[in-house]
Image (cartoon, rainbow, N blue to C red):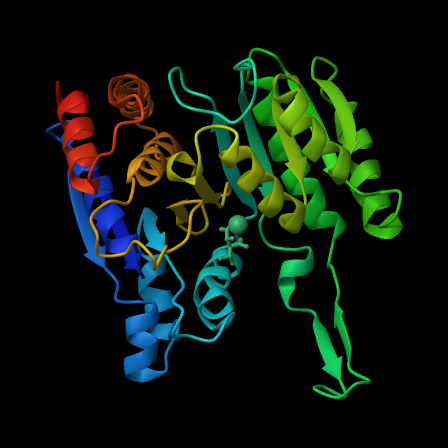
Length: 345
Ligand code: IPM
Ligand code: MN
């Protein structure tokens, strides 16, 4: 019989609250014959305060031995900025070679948007996940003096750019509109910009049925607000993708609905699924966080593991549930229960 060996990292703030609902929906949607084995990892602010550890090597080794990872949120006001982000979240993305950071954006019917005229929004951002300005390749001179100099060098390799561009073309080809937009800033970042554009144009020759487009990142933010329907698949670098996907979440009902997958397409390492939002310490413990982003991340997890009907059932349930709640306030648990009931029935 089939099984899913899932590592769970609830993390900080609202992380444990939304993950509990994600697991509830996962259990409800899985066929009877699929055995779900979860192992929970105590990682995040609590662990750091208690032991000073972010992600010990032994834990990283144990995490490898799973089919996938479900993560809630990492980050805490009591921990210096960057410690958990770099020492835990980014360490996982880098160690497990999550080079495709997949972030779908869809405006569900009846979901509020700040945009006029309710445009059709249904695109996916393929954000590079292991390079760019995120590699920690930088330094500081004369730190803390009036003459301080800080560098933060963006690393872009031919290997790293090509593999994510190829993944994005394949995803674009599999969608009805078959359109791929490269977002960069090659009028200013000429070296990395050249590598990205050149790679994009070369791979495009192998996908004659995919329509291609290029936008500078600043222009892309305008279109995300004025004409988001023009986007189908976007491929972009790590930092541009980080920023664009928060904007994309804001126009599609907010960060409470934005799901993501940190994917290692080669299957060498477990892929990791997490809501785009953070630990939201301001509402942690109030039981009011929206678990929908985590539940939609569970759908991405299922799709990645080959459970397409179950993934689609979750997405259909979310669409129906969003129509039903029509913006009315809900507790975290009410939303989890509503979605668990829909996917089971
Ligand atoms: C995200 C987050 C992370 C990122 C932070 C917490 C390191 O903003 O997942 O989008 O920048 O990738
Ligand atoms: Mn972000």
